[in-house]
Amino acid sequence: MSESARWSAIGTTAEVFVTDERELPLARAILEEELEAIDLACSRFRDDSELARVNASPGRWVDVSGLFVEALDAALGAARATDGDVDPTVGRALRVAGYDRDYAQLPAVRTGRVRFVAAPGWRLVQLDRTRPSVRVPRGVELDLGSTAKALAADRAARRCAEALEGGALVNLGGDLAVGGPPPPGGWSVRVTDDHEAAFDAPGQTVSISSGGLATSSVAVRRWRNGDGLAHHIIDPSSGRPASEFWRTVSVAAANCLAANIASTAAIVRGAAALPWLDSLRLPARLVGVDGEVARVSDWPAEATA
Image (cartoon, rainbow, N blue to C red; front, side, top):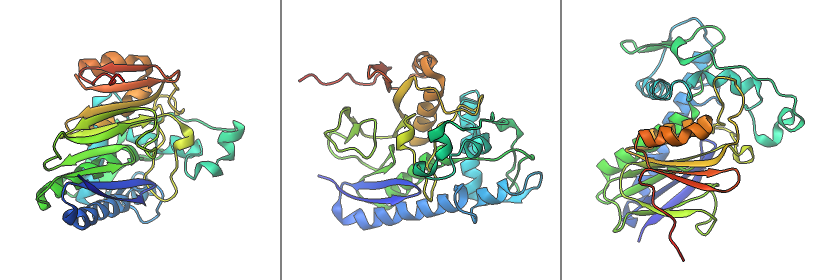
């Protein structure tokens, strides 16, 4: 039996589950601390974030924290691993397309009056790990939302594994990370189109005992930012929202960050995601816009009634 806490943070839903109910307050405190730190470092929606300072200082070196270096390293690593399909220089593309406010406040999206610009490319980002500091050229705006959220889940899960006697599961808007020993049979997770849906929503229940699992979606209606790190998936090559080939993609990997990178890139790649994920031997469940489900690698089949 597990106990959990759930609240709103960084523009999404934060949840932490523990195997020992006595350790729930400590697990929540750990996750809250990690979320505040990642928000202050990487949020596009607060003027005092490190990301905001970097984006506001084109052509100049900006001193940053170790956490920001870790988050930027993760984003640049994602770009290298996906040949640029997940690119941290999509910040301006998101902004000019109107994804800098709540969906209800996006008249341009609703009326079709939208601008698109391609991402300048992650290779333009300069990172000096010795100072540490970051420099981006004029015209480059960073967005670390997707990978930073997954990184926060991994960091919190690792800290829970170190601090708790029991196990913990961290869930940040569909980005899940396991820390410490799982309950017997593993953590039961409902994989659905909407991370806020009830456990009986259409989808599949799977069990995870270690590592991470992430689900990415192209559904604009579910995207919201408010005051945090929420992220809409953009195709960096065009600056347009990713094409609706897959409705959702769920991937299991050694950690939440790797799972998030793969699921996000799969949305961008469309049909080409299937052989790509298979070549990486990453278990994945992909739901097409018609509702048809494809499975890759060792992702379990649906249980029959």
